[in-house]
Amino acid sequence: MREVRELGADVHLIDTAMSGFDGIVAAYAILGDRPCLVETGTATSAPVVREALGRLGVGAEDLATIVVTHIHLDHAGGVGDLAAAFPKAQIVVQDTGARHLADPSKLMASARRVFGPVMDELFGELLPTDAARIQAIGDVGSVDLGGGRQLRAYHTPGHARHHLGLVDSATGDLYVGDAAGLYIPDEGADARTGLGPGGDMGEMMPGTPPPDFDLDLAVASLHRMRDLGAQRLLFSHYGPISRVDDSLARAEEEMRVWVEAVRDARRDGAGRGAEFDLDHAVAMVRDRVKDRYAGLAARPEEAAKFEGLSSAAANVSGIARWLEARGE
Image (tube, rainbow, N blue to C red):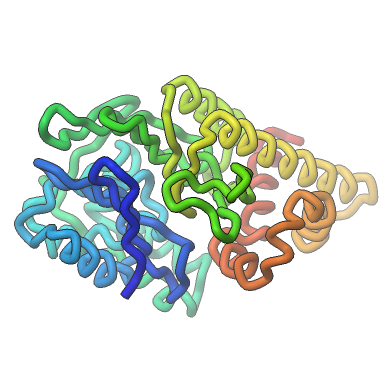
């Protein structure tokens, strides 16, 4: 039975158990008059999420809303399954991702090209959702949680063009999806604050995959989130962190360090008259950032599972694609 962690104010973290791992992908249940699920996890995680909602007292007819921060399959792959399991739930997504939930064929074909034979094991099949049940949000919007409580939604591109940040009006919690990368709490971190015994933060790493990564948009989204005045960040990978400004500043710093390292790798290759070499660039980036993640390196099993989720190669590829489009 996977973790369901109470975070206060009727908010519960659900470990979706992606690929059988603990502590890698979180969904969040907001209970109350109109129960809401933020993120679904993968299609293969849908039974885990459904069972966790049942333990929280959310039956098939009770869930009012399913919201996804973006349509990457570790966040939204279970939408079709959970829409079928909770037939009264409205599905909320950023406008540019809505058509892919109604007709996932292009999204799934693209994912199969990238992940090949491990696709089914990692993610499973994103099933289509009736378009009439999908609410698309543009730059701003809201989700009714009942009792005057709302999730206010803001377009936060950069990681993906179809990305939303979500602020709970009752708590000030900001669901950041992947817009601020990954937060990896230290061992023994507080369950509600995400901080270590001395108030220290864990590790933060960027999420910069192709095809949508754009540093300028990502930084603008981080600044937009900072200006929302959130009291706590809730990461899809993984869990809460109460040091909001520090976390968002660190997220920007990490992205800039990685972008500069990939830029240097591209220049190094160009200076030698060579084509861009992804393996060489990944090695350069790893060397550049190894001291930044020394704490994570001391936890090899934890490092390995997050590398499987957000690999250095994928992040370097996304940055290289963005730099190439800019002619750098």
